[in-house]
Image (cartoon, rainbow, N blue to C red; front, top):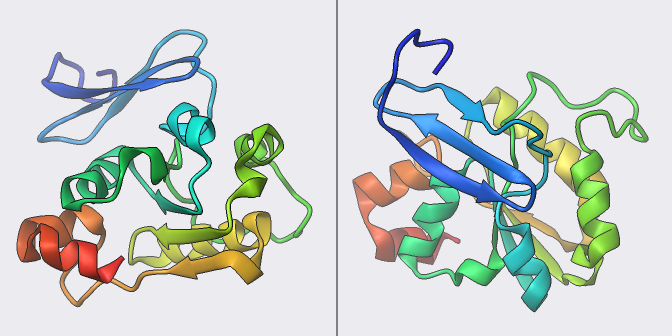
Amino acid sequence: YSNLGRKSEGLFFRYPEGWKSRSFPEKDFISSKGFKISFWNIDRVLANIPETVYITEGENDACALVEAGITVNAVLSVPNGAKERPADDPHDLRGYAYVDEALQAGLKKVKHFVWCGDEDGPGHALREDMVRLLGAARFYFVNWPDGCKDANDVLIFDGSEFLLDMV
């Protein structure tokens, strides 16, 4: 892990074109050479095209939803977290080409998207961009309880049944 300056334990996530790893307990990321930005788990979702797809702001949060009982075939994670603010130009896809590619590959057939992003400023900015990209008419979102920033926090502090009820 380059930012840590040393080796560290990490979680490994496969993507359609490459892999990404997250270190812990300190947070840093590294990806394979030639890594192409896409939704994490997009291949499984596109193979099944569920009626509802749950989108998180990180792979750990996506795994928390699966732990709570959401089928793995209905969960996606954005690949690179949130920006500080939403895009100024509603037609600006810089950094979001992977969303357009997924829609063209079949994600546009999904009837409902449930945003399960982080409960912070950048998470809200990313939510605004996703509403614009995926369509407001089929977009829903979860507000996490006080003291919880994301799905993983809810799983840790309140348990899987509570998390499943929220989403």
